[in-house]
Image (cartoon, rainbow, N blue to C red; front, side, top):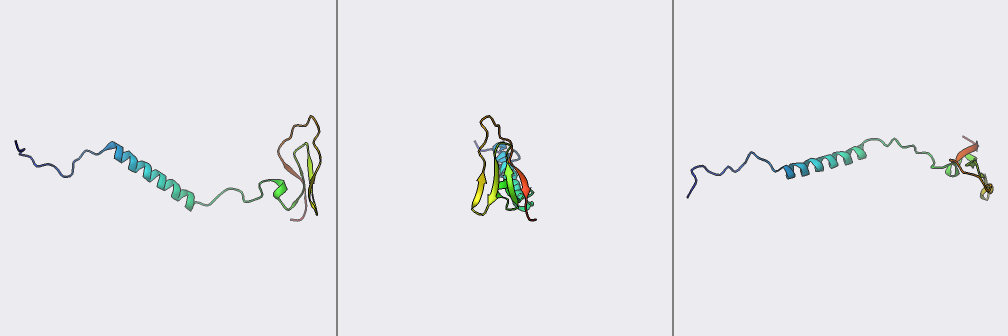
Amino acid sequence: MPSDTPADPHPTSRDPGGLAAWGIAALVAATVLLGVLLPNRAPHGPASPADDATCAEWGDGCRVCRRLADGPACSLPGIACTPGPLQCLHRVGG
């Protein structure tokens, strides 16, 4: 039996799964664009004093290392020493 009302080619109800997928895709795209366009605020300095050419001597409270012409030379740690974070102990130059 034919219906008197024609089928609506543009139904008003939307698929909630499709809408959620588009929302997630838009959020990911916005996050990637922000990551590319915003300036990097991370420090650009050396990761450790050993990588810093201006640091002539560094240590962790247990060992002390010194930059020599042949490369770095480090002391031996004590038997009951607990190392801390690396710190530059003496700088040269600028």
